[in-house]
Image (tube, rainbow, N blue to C red; front, top):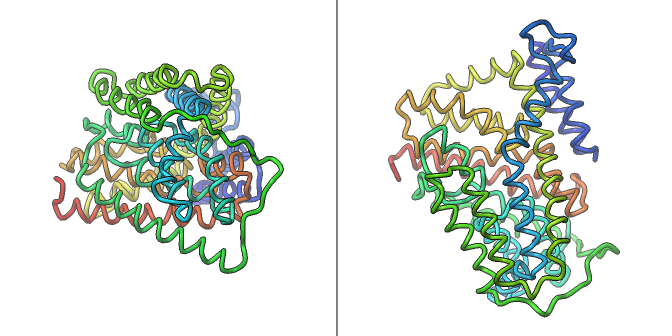
Length: 439
């Protein structure tokens, strides 16, 4: 009982401290200490017996292991996003979207811009960095409260694109080696679910924003806002070439290189951006440097919560929870969905949650005869739910580091769009697979 209190209490502490504005890189290990102490783990290797698990080793294995596995992908993705921004290609694509749908649909423009960049292979964190300046100008022109920008960015990046079939994001690729599938697994159900998320989620977001405007909220400028307006931009069709390059290269090299194909694909995006838009660059190497910094911020926040998960997963309480979740009676897809949702919530990371859950859940459910494609899509969709609790790396980075908002002002809408809507989508997907659709 005490060990379970420690596990849940550590997660609650992590959430509360993040909501109070503390740095994730500090509060994640601090909360993990609470989990370790109440689960009887020695704090340091020197205090542990031979073969005994300790806090420092467990936390740093999780932290460094995630960086080892994903740093090059984060780096390539961040640099790609920055060179797209510096060359004006990201603005060109975004502006093209705006001209097609109008300023009255400013929120939809932000959502679609994020969707195009995300499905084109740009890292989720980088998409937020790249689209935020455009989002600020659009919300300013439409006089909409800027506290809803994080929700719009996250909705366009982490919902109907991140976990959909064909997406080059890691949340769609992690299940592949465990389940023997491909990035297009369960595409029929994925398409239906993505359309549902887009329509229902956008309706809900606009309802929330309109209520705030009706209550007298409006856009408030800041001194730090970028006032620069670029007029010399590459053609939007040319600007789309790097995005298409990422998609095509990742598809071509998937079978031979698996996860590493995404690194090659993002490098192709960087190279094609330079080739086709080099005369529009303001400072290519400065963009590379800023992209590198962005990658370190993004992967640092994510690795911090994966480190928390690294401690949580070696505790007796976590083992008990996993045993319970993998033995849930009824439809195995429901059990798999619940397990991944809970583990992603405990770790605060969709990718971290999958990395922890799939080595256990994959063989367990495949041995039960579960359809691999259905499990792939269900797991992918499920990972993009409770990963966006207040302590999640993406939530902290987008709300505070990028948008400069507080969790108190920005997180309620963020929660509705990026937690509740995906949860409903998981239920829809499981229902469709259970009825035999797409299998």
